[in-house]
Every structure is written in C-alpha cells, then in structure tokens.
Length: 78
Image 1 (cartoon, rainbow, N blue to C red):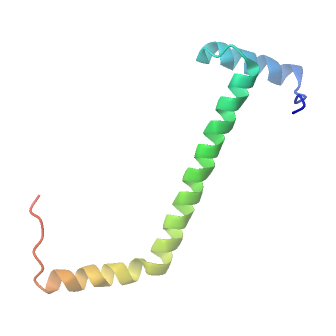
Image 2: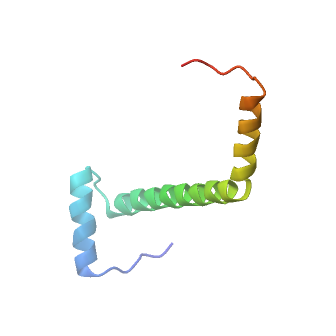
Image 3: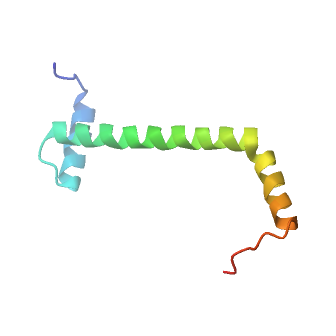
C-alpha cells in the first residue's frame, strides 16, 4: 500500500502523540487511531439501532410490562 501524504504539522502531531502513547512508529499511531475510530463508529451505530428499536417498540414493551405487573407476576425484591 502506498504512503499517505500528510502535512508537516500533522506529521508532528502524529509523532508527538506516538511519544505520549509509547508507540515508536507513525504507522502504529495511525493503526491505533483507525482502530479507535472503528470502535467509535460501531458504538454510534449500535446506539442508533437501539434508539430506532425503542422508537418503534418502546410503547409496546412498556404496555406489556405494565400488564405483567398488574397480572400479579412476582417481582424480584432487590
């Protein structure tokens, strides 16, 4: 794979961050940054999926829970 062209300023930032993190190579810093960005995107996508579910089915779940509560279903005493 070809090298990525970055500005001198960005290269300094990468090197400085690598020193702070104890990573000796610029590629290692970039690899770590890409891994973290992937995790962040996955968390955002999961959050969006949960919000969509709650928006679609939350009322039904609350109604079902209320019905179970009034039907005399035993609850765990915490």
